[in-house]
Length: 256
Image 1 (tube, helix red, strand yellow):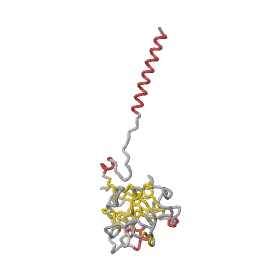
Image 2 (cartoon, helix red, strand yellow):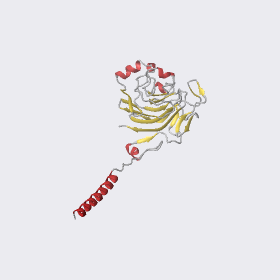
Image 3 (tube, one colour):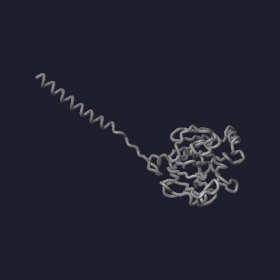
Image 4 (spheres, helix red, strand yellow):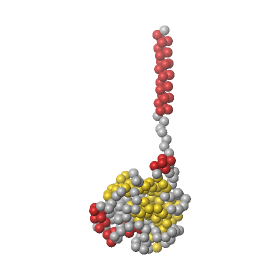
């Protein structure tokens, strides 16, 4: 009798264990989250106010600085905006040139992936005041997040000219990947507060338009351009510096 009672108890325990295991297996299922495909927005991003600046298929929303068109050196390649530089002219590209967003932005959070060629140089410029009669290039008004092959381009030997730097103003924490690999960059400009992120790490933080900002500019190569770094609203720019470069997943959220 005792043996029978023991066997029944064991059976009940095993059944209970199986039920518990089944419940744990159900409860421990990881919650899935929507992942954005290249050059798209998730439903969460849309709800948060993010907008695409590149759809992966066309150059709509971009134009060459000072014109209404775009040079044929800027092409769609590998679902990216690619500056194809087989035909160079001086330090830029024939039929290339710096390209700008159609819209202007003041306070914003920008995200973009970039990839640079061996020994390459480019940049992401913001707060650009488009006035070619007064300023020949976008970099004469807009600050820049440097895009560079740190291992090969001569600019890498200059402090404040390396990838992720606030070009010629502030050096960054180095998190850049080797040329040919994709880097994820973020620029957050919020009522004078400026932050750069590269590959998930905050690499630059400063305040714009105060005395310290003006002092930095006065000590930089931009001191000869009175309008540089003064505009609180402007266009975004992808720079033609005469080297192959790719940009994708360009998205922006305007901040209040």
